[in-house]
Length: 454
Image: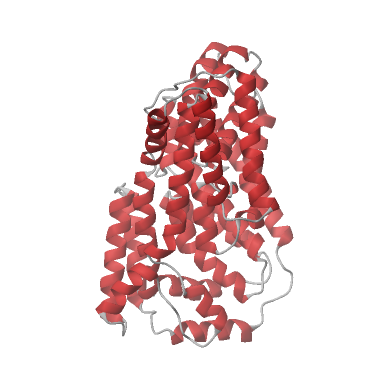
């Protein structure tokens, strides 16, 4: 949570009006004009600074708010830099190519999207990281989808749905541990309680993906062309599996994300130095600018040309802007005013659940950061749930159902920007097909007061 305290305390109507104005501005630029998300966020920053100055908040305090907001995302920024290196390292070590090639053995024309969703969910639970899952097996499945002429929108929706199922249900997940810690619930009690909404959302999503999956069989010639092009890279060896195994083991043994990504990247790079024909100067260049494939088959070349620190700079710059904007919303009192108003007016159980979900979603939309959506909403509603006699497990579950899984659906959010960049599919394109993410908050609202007390 930001350390800067509000320097102004607007009334609720003023805060809501500013919220609507800001969200409307961002939505107009993104959807109506099709601009890069940096533009409306920067304009929103300038608008909020102007609002703060009008309310007699010194620029020094406003600046502190921006800095505090940006500072809260530094851990994520360093991880993004490492993920850029990880993707390029997994390319040149053959890990991602061998995942794609192996996947062709299991996929078929029927039930393709359902298989993508289920396999990604299993790997997501194993890794405990939606972003890592998306950057590894997700990239591989995008390649498979391209090979079978599948819809990139639905494929990406299945990947995002599976990855965030794993992010919710894995005991290794940062958000899962955060949600249980914030409201003081045992981790495994929290995961067990989430099954009330998560399992129905998973089953319904699986059925939707199965229905949407293509009926026609995949031609062997099409697959052979892809496999031949992947072989032509000369990157795939039995050692290509080692970086992935190391990454999974590091996650199982709860090695910090920064260390596990760094170790996997270094091992993958060393293996590439031994098994590939790349020189070390080429490898360090790839660390920064990513790997460029040249098999002669454009679909495979497009798929494998990814990674590098440079590819993450778009994401990093947007994260800094978005979190700086969030800091401004704190110092001007906009968010504290909206959140605190709920604590005094909520009495009915269903209203409490709906307000919790709405707050978590609202923080995601306004700030674009899933950790803050969990932390702020949890801290705000703990007293409300205790007063209403609701269990802390109900709160921790709702935080994940409407906080964790909504972030990838916001185009300017940390997860949304990252996933769109890694998969090459815009957020608004895959959003209608991210069934699990869309269903989770709806089901938690539908459950209302059921199984929430005690």
